[in-house]
Image 1: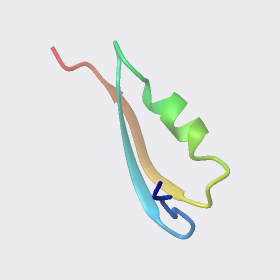
Image 2: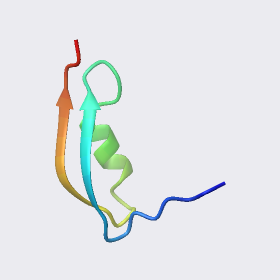
Image 3: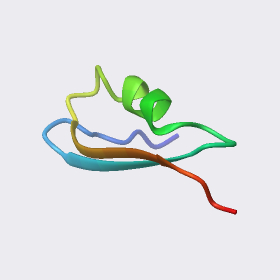
Image 4: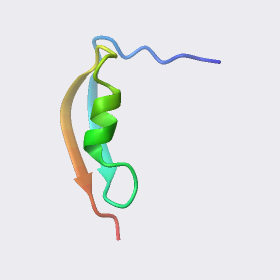
Length: 45
């Protein structure tokens, strides 16, 4: 299994209104050391 190292990385988060919202993805990244520079939840209809 390969692990992804996110420390000191800049991350763009785009969530889905009917799936996983951006805030939930951002919360998952909270303790990884990644810097979330943009987070949004969009509607893809």
